[in-house]
Length: 146
Image 1 (cartoon, rainbow, N blue to C red):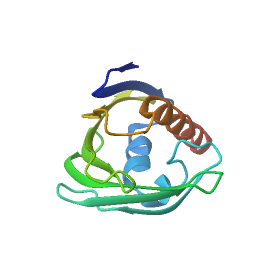
Image 2: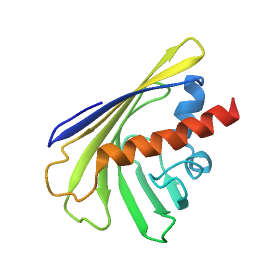
Image 3: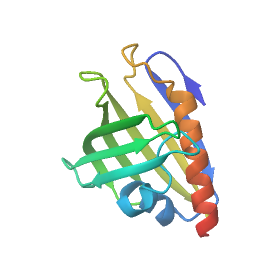
Protein backbone atom coordinates (compact mmCIF):
# COMPACT_ATOMS: atom_id res chain seq x y z
CA UNK A 1 0.00 0.00 0.00
CA UNK A 2 1.17 3.51 -0.77
CA UNK A 3 -0.68 6.69 0.03
CA UNK A 4 -0.19 10.44 0.00
CA UNK A 5 -2.57 13.38 0.25
CA UNK A 6 -3.85 12.86 -3.27
CA UNK A 7 -3.88 9.11 -3.93
CA UNK A 8 -4.02 5.63 -2.48
CA UNK A 9 -2.60 2.53 -4.15
CA UNK A 10 -3.30 -1.03 -3.03
CA UNK A 11 -2.35 -4.34 -4.62
CA UNK A 12 -4.35 -7.35 -3.49
CA UNK A 13 -4.09 -10.97 -4.61
CA UNK A 14 -7.34 -12.93 -4.50
CA UNK A 15 -7.31 -16.72 -4.63
CA UNK A 16 -10.06 -16.56 -7.23
CA UNK A 17 -10.39 -16.48 -11.01
CA UNK A 18 -10.39 -13.08 -12.68
CA UNK A 19 -13.99 -13.67 -13.84
CA UNK A 20 -15.17 -13.86 -10.21
CA UNK A 21 -13.29 -10.72 -9.19
CA UNK A 22 -14.66 -8.84 -12.21
CA UNK A 23 -18.18 -10.05 -11.40
CA UNK A 24 -17.77 -8.84 -7.81
CA UNK A 25 -17.16 -5.30 -9.12
CA UNK A 26 -19.73 -5.29 -11.93
CA UNK A 27 -22.71 -7.40 -10.80
CA UNK A 28 -25.07 -5.63 -8.37
CA UNK A 29 -26.24 -9.00 -7.01
CA UNK A 30 -22.65 -9.75 -5.96
CA UNK A 31 -21.53 -6.29 -4.83
CA UNK A 32 -24.34 -6.22 -2.25
CA UNK A 33 -22.56 -9.07 -0.47
CA UNK A 34 -19.25 -7.31 0.20
CA UNK A 35 -19.22 -3.56 -0.37
CA UNK A 36 -18.56 -1.18 2.54
CA UNK A 37 -15.81 -1.06 5.14
CA UNK A 38 -17.83 -2.04 8.23
CA UNK A 39 -17.45 -5.82 8.75
CA UNK A 40 -21.05 -5.94 10.00
CA UNK A 41 -22.47 -3.41 7.57
CA UNK A 42 -24.74 -4.18 4.65
CA UNK A 43 -25.54 -2.83 1.21
CA UNK A 44 -29.08 -1.54 0.94
CA UNK A 45 -29.12 -0.76 -2.79
CA UNK A 46 -26.73 -1.13 -5.73
CA UNK A 47 -27.32 0.27 -9.21
CA UNK A 48 -24.53 -0.50 -11.70
CA UNK A 49 -24.69 0.41 -15.39
CA UNK A 50 -21.22 -0.87 -16.25
CA UNK A 51 -20.36 0.75 -19.59
CA UNK A 52 -18.42 3.88 -20.54
CA UNK A 53 -20.67 6.77 -19.51
CA UNK A 54 -22.80 4.48 -17.31
CA UNK A 55 -23.79 5.47 -13.79
CA UNK A 56 -23.40 3.62 -10.49
CA UNK A 57 -24.86 4.30 -7.08
CA UNK A 58 -24.36 2.21 -3.95
CA UNK A 59 -26.13 2.82 -0.66
CA UNK A 60 -24.84 0.96 2.37
CA UNK A 61 -25.28 1.01 6.11
CA UNK A 62 -22.82 0.47 8.95
CA UNK A 63 -23.67 -1.67 11.98
CA UNK A 64 -24.44 1.54 13.92
CA UNK A 65 -27.10 2.34 11.23
CA UNK A 66 -25.07 5.19 9.68
CA UNK A 67 -25.92 5.31 5.97
CA UNK A 68 -23.55 6.15 3.14
CA UNK A 69 -24.16 6.67 -0.56
CA UNK A 70 -21.44 6.79 -3.19
CA UNK A 71 -21.89 7.27 -6.90
CA UNK A 72 -20.00 7.95 -10.09
CA UNK A 73 -19.67 7.50 -13.81
CA UNK A 74 -17.78 4.66 -15.51
CA UNK A 75 -15.05 6.08 -17.73
CA UNK A 76 -13.20 2.97 -18.93
CA UNK A 77 -14.58 -0.57 -19.05
CA UNK A 78 -12.37 -3.35 -20.41
CA UNK A 79 -14.01 -6.60 -19.28
CA UNK A 80 -11.84 -8.76 -17.04
CA UNK A 81 -9.00 -6.19 -17.21
CA UNK A 82 -9.69 -2.57 -16.31
CA UNK A 83 -12.41 -0.50 -14.70
CA UNK A 84 -12.12 3.25 -14.19
CA UNK A 85 -14.81 5.44 -12.67
CA UNK A 86 -15.39 8.71 -10.85
CA UNK A 87 -16.25 8.64 -7.14
CA UNK A 88 -18.43 10.96 -5.06
CA UNK A 89 -20.09 10.75 -1.65
CA UNK A 90 -23.61 12.13 -1.25
CA UNK A 91 -22.43 13.56 2.09
CA UNK A 92 -19.58 15.48 0.40
CA UNK A 93 -20.99 17.24 -2.66
CA UNK A 94 -18.35 18.67 -4.96
CA UNK A 95 -15.57 16.40 -3.65
CA UNK A 96 -14.80 14.17 -6.65
CA UNK A 97 -12.10 11.57 -7.02
CA UNK A 98 -11.31 8.73 -9.42
CA UNK A 99 -10.79 4.98 -9.06
CA UNK A 100 -8.90 2.63 -11.37
CA UNK A 101 -8.94 -1.13 -10.98
CA UNK A 102 -6.62 -3.32 -13.05
CA UNK A 103 -7.01 -7.11 -12.89
CA UNK A 104 -4.31 -9.57 -13.88
CA UNK A 105 -4.88 -13.34 -13.88
CA UNK A 106 -2.09 -15.25 -12.14
CA UNK A 107 -2.80 -18.98 -12.45
CA UNK A 108 -5.97 -19.60 -10.43
CA UNK A 109 -5.55 -16.27 -8.63
CA UNK A 110 -6.10 -12.64 -9.59
CA UNK A 111 -3.92 -9.65 -8.80
CA UNK A 112 -5.96 -6.49 -8.34
CA UNK A 113 -4.17 -3.16 -8.60
CA UNK A 114 -6.42 -0.53 -7.06
CA UNK A 115 -5.78 3.20 -7.24
CA UNK A 116 -7.98 5.91 -5.75
CA UNK A 117 -6.74 9.27 -7.07
CA UNK A 118 -7.43 12.96 -6.53
CA UNK A 119 -8.41 12.50 -2.90
CA UNK A 120 -7.20 15.92 -1.86
CA UNK A 121 -7.98 17.11 1.62
CA UNK A 122 -11.69 17.78 1.09
CA UNK A 123 -12.85 14.35 2.25
CA UNK A 124 -13.27 13.27 5.85
CA UNK A 125 -12.98 9.58 4.94
CA UNK A 126 -10.02 7.39 5.93
CA UNK A 127 -9.72 5.76 2.53
CA UNK A 128 -6.73 3.55 3.37
CA UNK A 129 -8.48 1.87 6.30
CA UNK A 130 -11.83 1.82 4.52
CA UNK A 131 -10.63 0.12 1.34
CA UNK A 132 -8.46 -2.37 3.25
CA UNK A 133 -11.48 -3.42 5.35
CA UNK A 134 -13.68 -3.54 2.26
CA UNK A 135 -11.23 -5.79 0.40
CA UNK A 136 -11.06 -8.16 3.38
CA UNK A 137 -14.82 -8.61 3.00
CA UNK A 138 -14.38 -9.20 -0.74
CA UNK A 139 -11.62 -11.71 -0.06
CA UNK A 140 -13.88 -13.67 2.33
CA UNK A 141 -16.75 -13.66 -0.17
CA UNK A 142 -14.53 -14.88 -3.02
CA UNK A 143 -12.97 -17.60 -0.82
CA UNK A 144 -16.41 -18.84 0.20
CA UNK A 145 -17.57 -19.06 -3.41
CA UNK A 146 -14.46 -20.86 -4.75
